Structures are given as C-alpha cells and as structure tokens.
Amino acid sequence: MHPAQPAESAEHEPVEPAPATDAAVPAARPAPPREAEPADAAAEEGPAPLGVPVRATGHGPVDAVLARLADVDRLGVGGHPEVYEDVHEGLRQTLAALDQPTGPPVPRAPHPSRS
Image (cartoon, rainbow, N blue to C red; front, side, top):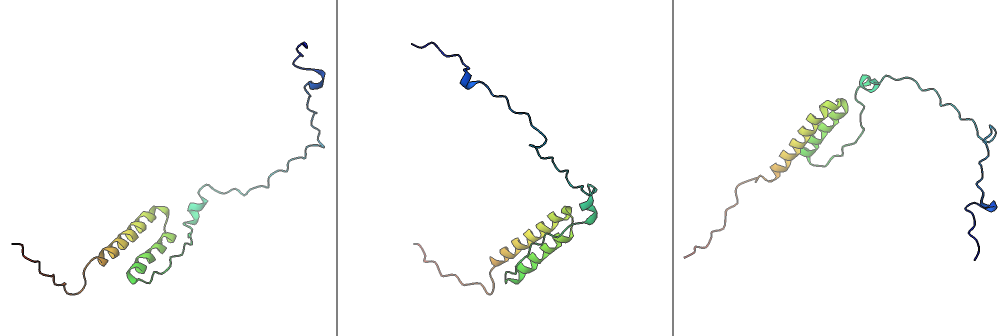
C-alpha cells in the first residue's frame, strides 16, 4: 500500500492571484450629470394623457358611454375612480336595457288544463 499523500502536494499548491495593475483594469467613466428635478415635477405638470384609443363599437349608447373615458386623460389620478364608475354604470344600464322587452307583449300560449 502506498502511504497517504498529504492534502497539498507540490502539484496542487494554492496559487496566489496576481495583483491588479492600472493597465489591466480600465478606469470607470463618471456618469453624466443629471439635471436636478423636483420630486413633485410630475404634479406640477399635471396629468399626462395615456393615449389609449377607444374604438367605436357601432352601438350608439355604448360608444357614448365609452367616450367618457377620454376624461381620464384630463384628470388627476384622484378623479379616475369617478369616471370608471360612471362608465361601468352606463355599460351596466345599457346591457340591462337589452333585456327589456320592446313592442307589445307577446301573447302566451294557453296551457292545457290538468284534470
């Protein structure tokens, strides 16, 4: 049997890393100066339009309700819920109106009597 080899032999000695030189590491460039903006710059400018188009559906009542969404672009965030609630309610009413019968009532067929 061979005697156990030591943990570190001449072949596997730890290697020290070479010290870094200025030529090996490029100098970092400083970031370009940024213009100082106040934290509330966006608040001073007012709301910015999102630019989300609303396409016509071809159904007049729905298109009229959806046109209200354009108000969101002119309002601050605090005014958005009111617009969205108005649009939701208008669409709900338009859908509910589709369930209402139009014209004269349809006569019902007579039920056979059970005797």
